[in-house]
Image 1: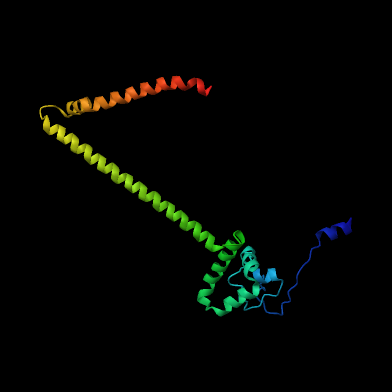
Image 2 (image 1 turned 30 degrees about the horizontal axis):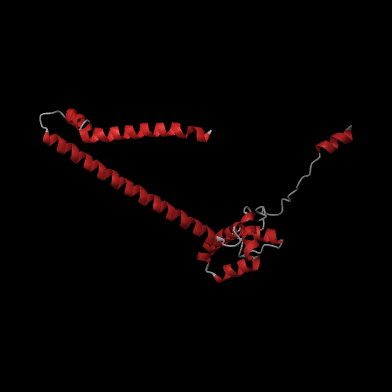
Length: 196
């Protein structure tokens, strides 16, 4: 029973000698994502470490698949430090596009976006033309109503609109449309047996 108590309560202890000055705890820095994937020791002045942190391994894996580690390192060493972050972002984007579309890569995405821009510009031009057409029709209608109102000043605006609607030129067109509809219904009855 005593041995069980000793084993359960015993835990590893760390002893610090009182003679040594207290030193700050050593921080273990994990290697960058590039060195971790390449299974190599991450040097203190690793060129890839600032741009491929250990928390983003997919970023390096994508770029490594397309460009290769030696090319990435060579590209970065040739550039000034102020441009390296943008270069890494561009390489990762291009690699991702190249993996998605091995033939065209970024050019395919650019062509697709340009096609969408052209289609949207055509739709916008069509909508603008329709707006101009509707404004023109509205102006014609207002001018026509004003002309009707000046010809019959004693009538109220509602009466002039009613007169305009019931004028012979408008009612004859309406009657012609009704006659056309009646003719079509009689033709439909003739054609009906053919479709059954």
